[in-house]
Image (cartoon, rainbow, N blue to C red):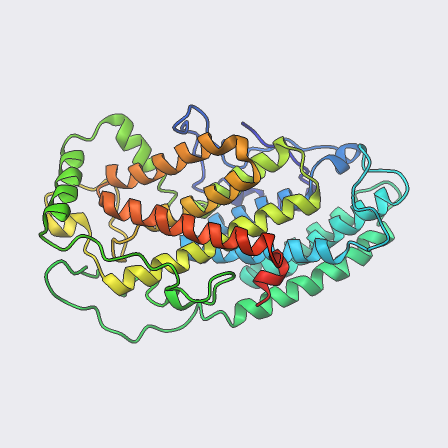
Length: 418
């Protein structure tokens, strides 16, 4: 599966960042994957109406996440803020007296005006949010905005300018929210000691992330899972023995899976994998800008909340990693510096896949297979127990169901504006 969308000249300013550490082309569990990372074919201006401009700006976000070596938690925060801002901006440009559905070619009475307003709205929101997170890129991002506005015959359309102002306002609102989301709160606690307790290697990673302001949840502990099997219990020893066996008999295919799904710092990270998967579906199903930005916003806000809930549980239970319980367990890469239970990768993957399955129900089998493979990959790597994966999937799915219900009842914007 591949994705093609508009890449205007301004986006090429940051093009080298798009491939930094991101050359993942291993097949997924069903023989396909969301695609090689950010390999794109440009479209001409004549095809402008055929692809939502949010796709290009999301690609820009993935490139900046990789180039700036963001952690998965920081990346999830970027993707959520960018996506919600884009959706707010597009929705704010929909006048009640204009049909928001474009003709097949994006033209016609009101069609071009609506298209240009949406393009401007996405550009304005995206530039503001991405400039906040990546201030060194602000000049290049504004250059991209200018070139997108001038990309249509006859120069900048007045509705693009109108949409741009609306988008900047939406971006400002998300930046203000992000400034106050407690992501930068300092941790002042201590790492507990005792049998079965996780042992830190330096300052714990994301120790306050469970207290970040969520988009949908009432609090980080809303879906906190029950405790993991007790240290030394039969259930614990069974799952520990499974990881010990996998580590000592790891096959080339299992090693490849562990490495493929890791998406470490310097890539677009695991949340970026699901961003790319969503982008591919959006193009394949020919969603318009409103539907595309809705899909990104719902998925990324749910994934952000799932990670908040996951990190709340990690630092509530402080469960040790398998290789801390048995130092002879060989790892495929460095041990993450946060507790084991539940698996953050599975929390994020299950939440993202549940939202995408809701939006694209005929892809459920494929999405479920990716979630399963992502979870198994962490066991193959030696860094998670099976009970970590199961709890992560349950938590991610619970958050996604909650987010979907709020999206269907008060609506996405009402839900995330609380």
